[in-house]
Length: 307
Image 1 (tube, rainbow, N blue to C red):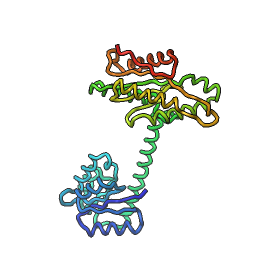
Image 2 (cartoon, helix red, strand yellow):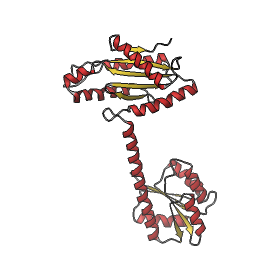
Image 3 (cartoon, helix red, strand yellow):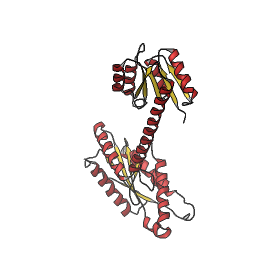
Image 4 (tube, rainbow, N blue to C red):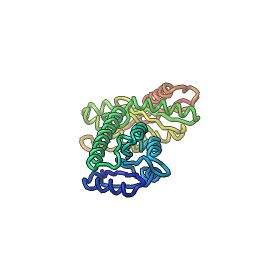
């Protein structure tokens, strides 16, 4: 990935001196300049940088105000800033560090010192970026079913609680559906559990492909899946669920189970409704509707009784 640096100083001579030093050792792919904090902030908002070198005293917006503005933007606040200060400005150095600067270089600066401090900040940023990626991966793993790659039950329950509260505040409709694969035990018995797992993976992909961006699907347990359709009326919810049921019925599988025909039963519940006062009521009603669908012959959608 291309790296970039932004140099902010009202002196073009200082900017050119810094550019010359850093270009000689090829630390960055892109070099940008700004004459004050306002232009520097505009530049960062258009194109993020890996590092900023910023003078303290500048017209229009000084270095302290510039850093303060960076701290208000989530996309900018983690960019390291090295401040340029006068040799005797000890108070300014302390103030700059208190405001969020990562380091400082005194003017006139030694080229070797400047390069060393820049390299240190780049190493720190690389470590921080790697840690963020690791934390994000851990978060995704904690929210994801390891087999199918869709959300797991724990994540779904948290999302359902949030959406339920939001629907209650906004008086918005909400549809929930529980899906169960018909006679899944027969599939495992005939083809083996590894092939049964492949069926689950394929089914999850098909369902996910039929849903809207803001709908949520999770593996509820075993061969059961659960779906949350925010801002979806009962009629709209039934239409979506019927479409899913039909899509599953049309699924075709490669060898070794090309003869397999898969069907699912679903139970649907909706909010608001007289009996629904919590997410557990919503799940219970969907589960009851699913039981009716299976008792009625499977491969169908059971609907929550609204009266």
